[in-house]
Structures are given as C-alpha cells and as structure tokens.
Length: 305
Figure (tube, rainbow, N blue to C red):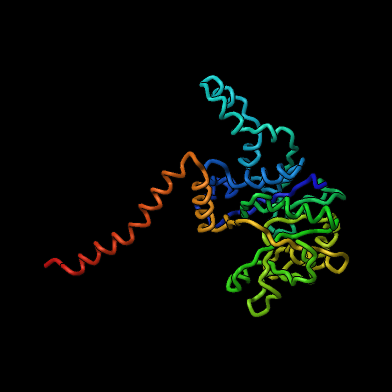
C-alpha cells in the first residue's frame, strides 16, 4: 500500500506575480479551496497517511492552512455556523501526519523529490504536483496505484498532447501495452517536436519506488542548473521496468493563467450552489464581443464631424 505522498510546493510561482509575491501560488483559490488542498484530498482519498511538503521558509501559509484554528472554529460555533467547521478542517486531516521540509535552493523537481528521502525511507511513494488538477470518477492517483499494486513497479501518469506543445513536458517512448499499463521504453525531458518519441506527455502524478533516490543523487544538473526527475527516471529504466498510465478524465494545468481560469470556471459549473448564476455570467460575457462589434461598427459607419 502507498502511504506516503510528496508534494513539491517550493517554487516561486512567477507566472502569477504579483499575486504570488505574498500568497503562495498553491494557496490561490479555485472557488473556495486553495489549489494545494485538491491534491491533498486526492492523496488522502487514496489511503495516503503521510503528506510531505517540500516547501520554502517563506510559505508559512501552507502549514497554517492544514493546522486546526481553534479560535476560528469557536467563533463559527458561537455564530451558529457549525457546518463550516468541517469544511474548514475536515476530520480526515486529523488522521494525517504532515511534514514540511525546506528546499533551500530551487534546483528542480528531481532535487525537490530527493529532499523527501529521510521521511520516505525504503517505501514506494506518490508524488503529486498541485499545479495539475484532475477530475474523474476514479482519481488519477488511484489509477496509478491500481497498476502499481499489480506490477510493484514505478508508474507515471501521461496524457496525449498536441506536438506543438510537446517541448514543455517530459515525454515517454511507449513500449508493450498490458491492459491499462504501458511499459516505458524511454523518457525524454522537453524534446523538440521533431525529436519527440511520442505525443504522450508526463503529467503531475507519479508512483515511485524508493530506488529512485539513488538515481536522483547521481543525476547531473541540466543546462538550467536543475536536477530533473525525468532524467532520474530515465536512469532508473536501466535497472527496472517502469510503466505509464494514460490518465482517464479531465486535467487542468493550473500553473498557467488560462488553465487556472479554465479550472475555476469548470468547477463553478459543477457547483450546484452557484452554477446557474455562473452560466448567466458566461452567457452575458459571450454576448459582449458581438455587442461591441455592433457598437464599433456603428461608430465607424457614422463618424463624428
């Protein structure tokens, strides 16, 4: 059973500046929950008992968010808002052990994962990148755990993407397919479209055996000075089988502004308490370009003297 999960959250979130200057990108809300909470809940719902945040000293709010706030709970209780207490601090959080390990230098995803070795030990573990938000009947992590339970191997989530964007991702060379599991023959970090071994890009969920740590230690930094998890996985392939799972469901890249907005709208439309109003807002916005075109057209047709 997978009981430990690593969540790298130390990055600066520069694409969301100035919003992320004082508020960690992972704490920006999708409707009424911070982005990072979706990943934490996905992990807990899969039986994870230990959450290991690889963070930075400035990100106090993440730790504060997952701690009980007795004063706020008492105020809610006294004001007749008992129902909010469970939303504020779900009981399932009380059963989880949270670790916070500082990544003092931003040296890449591989370096971040390596910081968790002392807590993970010799156990297989999950890695969840909170930037990637998934929606499906069976969670992305659960889909990976099913394959790991059968193979005892490391498993990586992948999805098909347009080749014009392939240079942004780690990409696998798929081998033999066995049911839902695809054996990985090779993996390449951010290839050019013409060099990509497939259109199957790695997305932000992994199940890794602890053997990855030795390979992370021997992985050299890339041109940007970062230790890439993809390069360590490529090295691990020489020693053991690794599998990929094509994720079944919706995925939102909340590390980009457009992905963040897309996820927010999608969740809002699923929320029965607000979706009717949101549909009206979307309809209103959708009509505005046509209205603007009419106004602009009239203005151009009847210029003032």
